[in-house]
Image (tube, rainbow, N blue to C red; front, side, top):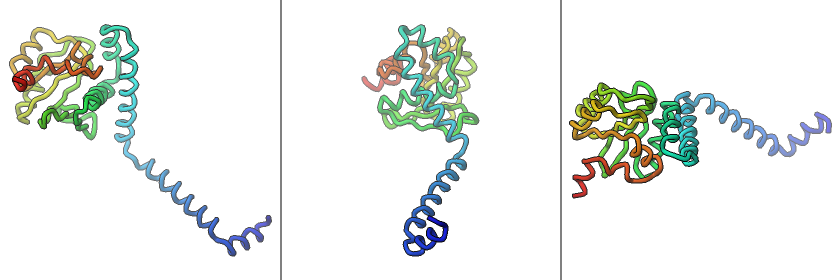
Length: 199
């Protein structure tokens, strides 16, 4: 078909040309939207996908020691997303931060029994420091709420002592952390707050 014949056919029946033009506009709009999507949104999506893969990988590891070693090596932002994903999978409402840095000392929030709990996630390979526990406790006091300090490191005697003096701060690590990630509700059993509420 020559160009003259094609243009004559389009004049008689303009529907194919119109459909082609609409298709072209739709493709261009999608490409434009994709480019305008914020880098932070793409980063969140990437870390959330990585958290799903980490959760699946944890199920394949043979023991708690291997699971903790694996958790200590993942990206800190993936660790944050991993915790939020695990809480969501337990049917809890999770509030994510808009960005990973400049978050004011919190890495997310979870709603338990209609109360907002702040989360601070620390992917450590060594012992946590009492200063981090104190700082988070002060933040909780300022905001008049409770919170979970969740970490992969060891909780030394001084950190444990600082944490035990606060009625609003709960440290989740070790076996309780693995229970949380596995979807077992036992991770809350050590929290005196929930023991008092169930009485």
